[in-house]
Length: 252
Length: 88
Image 1 (cartoon, rainbow over the protein chains, first blue to last red):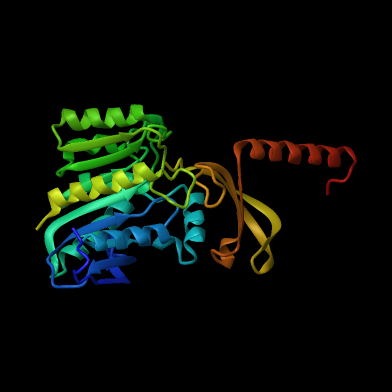
Image 2: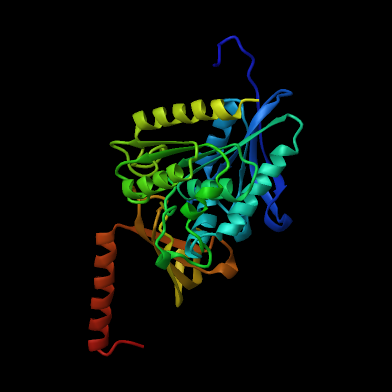
């Protein structure tokens, strides 16, 4: 817990890392100043892109003592203002799951290469980023904790599977190697409370270490202070739960 | 959650963006997260010309009701134009 007489410093900058197939990915990287060792966090942005909210979230993790990296999963769409890049990706129906998992794994490998990062690395995401975080935790061995915030399309009907998203993430549940924290809103349409219950049942079936919270009075994206779905009390509580969870499982 | 519901079509037209008029050759119609309208999901239309870069984009974000009204208005206007023998 921060005390007013403590020194605090942070380094935050864009860096280049290797993603899937060693493609060069630009990423936003924030870490506390000091020798560490710090736990690591891969921060997975949402469908609206590699935007300001995600830069802020990355710095928030650094403020709480994590070396945090947020890869630009839309880098292959080109460079422009985040909204225009995200609009292009939206028009293409999103990015392939394999590509997202490969890039997230690359971010984990990057963190592990750093002398001031301890051996514990988590992954966090909201919206499509929550889904991608869950997929990466299940498919890219090495994560020690995952935080899925309202990731929809984890439960997917077979008819809705696509070449870009060929497997429902819930079907990877048996491979999840680490604890998971899930934060959801009761009024969300995707994931619905019923879909979250199915996900929870799968985690229970495979005896996974999970902690799910379903917030009344909240819908999708209740952390986003710049959107109408922002819910102050639920967001504050959600962030507290995230840092309590990560502190439990990622301490050095 | 992002729905990923999108339909992209080729079009002939012009759009006025930040730097003036340009040729648009694609329209991307999605029902997904918008960037501005205060709704969780909206009917989004991006008129673009990818050859001119990501900034060559004219965007609208509409409520479902507005989108349906727009479709009806376009149809109605085209039918009147056709009835009047004005279509090129």
